[in-house]
Length: 296
Image 1 (spheres, rainbow, N blue to C red):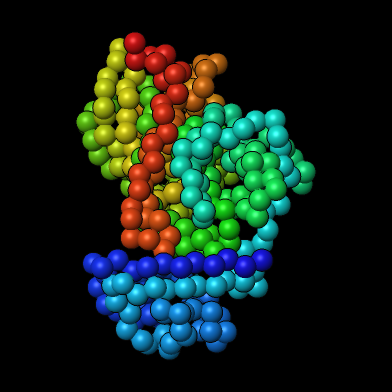
Image 2: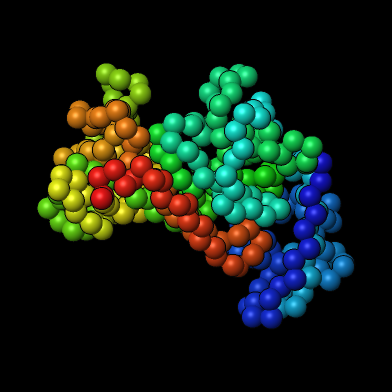
């Protein structure tokens, strides 16, 4: 399998070496740049040039990738045709889908069906695309989910996540009223030694976790909160808000007063630069109707 890219640099592009363009701007790894260089699969204006060559606005950069360049394994997900994914944004490299509550991001067992990755594998049937999991949403969290369509952009998107270039904004409804209208929660999260499903503050093998929140509205017994993640730990929003004494309504793990209703946590917006492009886009997932339950 091969992937070909032809990118015309903008007239506003600031000159730099081809190596800097590939590694610093486009976030290709040194290993991939090495393969492109030694096999002469990177061209500038139709010719192979050394990677220390200065490129500038108007230059045409061509990249040719092969499957052997990448360590990313093929997705192990079987296609599931029972549910069509809702596409919020799509180009040749990636897509943002609207994950419903109750649907897993990916299957955990061989030949398991019913996850978003299964539905996307079916969506890609008879194409050369595959569904590559870039990040995950909890099963009962709805909203915007970023998915790669080829192994070229998987490491790029992973680096965008690790360097906090990708910004994710969530909405949730929590129990009660917070003392402060906005703030930052900066406490580590680790494993719960008594329940392998759960995480807890300062649990086993804790990792730093930073959550920024802002109260958007208050209701009789609840509050609508906007949350921006600086880190992306498992169950981070759920654990941090429960730690404040304001668990998310409908949370089956961290809200002792959980009622039989969907968890009111929604991946609302995701903002990121497109690979091989300096354009930053923001994709918004419509707020589910069940969020009106306590806001009327």
